[in-house]
Amino acid sequence: MYEQADIFVTPKIAKRLIALSGVRVGIPVAPLPGEGLADLIYRAACLNRFNRVRDMVGLGFNFSHAWAVDDRTHNLGLADRLGTPNGHADLEPLMYRRFSSGASNVNFFGASLSRFQLMGKRRVSPLSLKSSLHSKAIWHLRGLSFDPNNYQYLISSCPNPSCSKELNFIYPLGVNRCHRCGYDLREAESEMVVTDDKSALDFVTGLVDPERPEGKRAVAQLHPDLRGQNPGELFTLCVLIGAAFQNQDPTARRKIATSTIDPPNLAIAARAVLTWPDGLADIVSRLGRFRGAAEGTEPHSFSRFCKDAGVLNKETIGTIKKVIAFSRSGHKQARCLRRLEVINPNAKRSLRLEVAALTAASTDRYFLQAASISKLPPIVLYDSYLEHLDLRGPNRQDVFGKKVLAWASELYPVAVSSPTLGQTGLPLRDTVNTLFRGRGNVWPHVLAGVRNGMLPIVRAPAKGQSLESLYVQDFPTWQRFLAGAEGVKASLDYPLTSIEVAFFLNMSIGAAQTLFDYKSEFTFKHLHRFKQKFALVDELVCLAAIQGRELTRSSISRRLVSARIRSTGDRYVRRAPALRHLGLDF
Image (tube, rainbow, N blue to C red; front, side, top):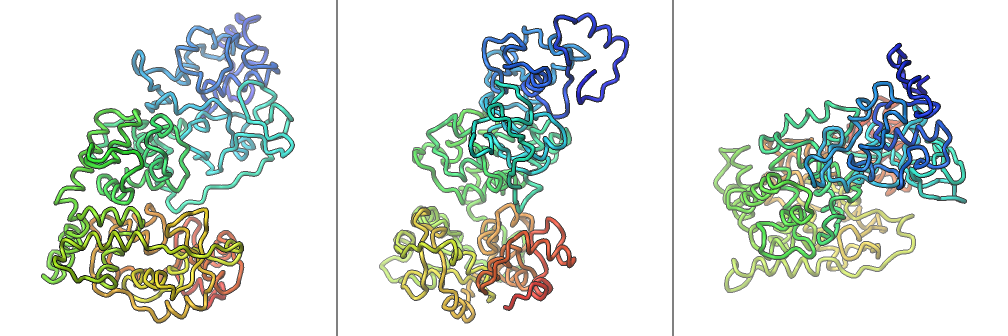
């Protein structure tokens, strides 16, 4: 009787179905795992071959998740029309009830979300449709771009090149069909998400996934300042952090809170919440200030960014302000020095003084501007200052920040753009990470060589004047330079933050945060030992390209997994066995 749903029709249900003859649809339906009200109604209209969904339920408007808020649906008699076995009780969990009269937040399966998170168009996961012909509510949250159960990117328009029509909930030709041309969406190809921090993505999607109630229970394991928050509130916080990384305009307000966040940025955001408060402090130090944020109105513009979005409650905003204020106070701004005291309380006085100098430098407003402009970690700027900047002046303290800012402002020369960049070049960061095997911080020497023209680079025009715009094509010159280069030794024993580790290993912040916790010792010496022992798969791809071989990340992964050198999901592999198996020389 009930299509797809495994329901035993009891005498009570049979009596209800008979009583609803002439009212209910011919093929009744019952909710399937993960379905929202819009998904259930759409499936019923497809099964019963209605021309339009609104014709089946007698609506004066086109139905969708964005229109499924309870005040639009509670008097429609939907349970009887759909023939659900237990009446309205089957639909109640699917209703997006408002938390209070006039509130913009709705109850999305236990998560408090802004109603503007719900999108009007239809999105599908081809892999999921192959398993079961039903749509899922979580596919229609604006913040997500993939199915969290199979990690496939969602599609929102017909893949048929002669059609390309946007999918919707208006015309029910079939859950797996394009309503315009009939294309079977199960046959569509869509890429899979590649991430260095799947556990972080599992956490953030679990906060709102109707099929994983254990995801909401994970809130109880968070920092005490966050444990009392609704899972949806924390999901929204992750969306805002991710939007900040995607350079969303902070004046857009509502658009910020409803941005679709790329999985890498969403993972970074989730990891910041998982490692609260230090995770957020690291994020904020990397983000700097935003366009349009009023100077001086908040302890840091990120709190203004979140406040202006208008989707977080006062308690969450207060918690963010507290973390940022602490991070900018003398105690937290001395993070590098404080970490040294935590991990190495018996450190030599000379090292303590050096780290204290770096800490003091990091508080200078010109230094902070330089870090924001260059997108370089403070340790790179500081070592560059020590190695390559003229320190002479009437007052070293006064000229320090201004000199660093001037140097950073002129850091990236107008390099020649290359039409063959994609075929023959590698990003500068990839090249340095792959070819440098020495100890210490080599980046001050790299940047000096780029500035004076000794090290040839090309530029990707679309990426502007930034580190990400610089590419290497002349590999022999760079190999000779990096083979004989010595890193800055003065900072060998400085404790590194997760952002700095991510930069020097060329990995995501989330992946770096899994290597060590806040109290663990991780210095350039540890970095060198790590790179001697391990290699990232992406690094092996770059090394193959430098040696003139085309090896993709997936092909390398398959070969290493089959040779039992790598386990599926590993971020890095044992360097020596991997190089031998792949026939790569270094």
